[in-house]
Amino acid sequence: QGERLRVHIHLIDGATGFESWAQRYDGSLDGIFALQATVAQAVTNAVGNVLGIAMAPPPARGMTGSKKAYDLFLQGRSLSARVFGDGLLETAVDLLEQAVALDPQFAEAWVALAEAHQLIAVYTPCLDRRAASERMADCARTAIGLAPGLGYAYSLLGVHQWTQNDVVGALDLAFQGYRLEPNNPAV
Image (cartoon, rainbow, N blue to C red; front, side, top):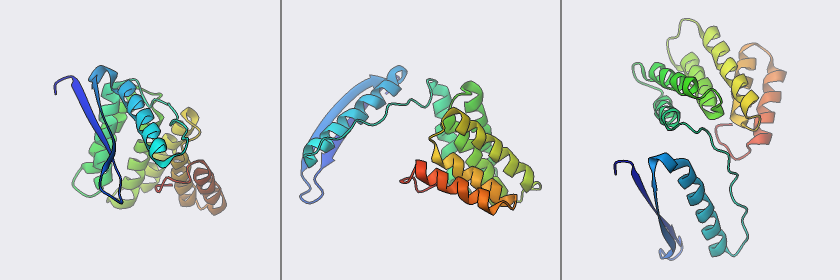
């Protein structure tokens, strides 16, 4: 509401349907990233307590310190996930380019931008698919340079290698992406 945020979290036992844990968190848009870290830590602890196991807290790596860049990133990802529709992917690229212009260190936005360029090359009547693939590879390389643990960036770069008829290089990159993020279905 306005600049204030309130998050309600409920942990429900799937077998019984009863609530095992609940908590409310209040914050502001200015502190949204700190609130996100607090909620992630609390949920991890609650799930660990319910399961009776010690769980390590999630790694605290902030994507960006810019709320505006993060908002543009979310909008761009949302549009690129829809894929089909007049101008959706081009608008997604524009939003994501704005995000990386605001925060050039925002690795996840670079990955999303790479993905949007890949989708343009594959799903639109693009006149220069090679250029779209090159742009995708440039964005993926930038993301890898900023955050080498982002496996999806390696996978996207592998797609580009495939288009260059470098099957072995493409597979090497795909396997590297999988090693880094084995639980990411996009990889």
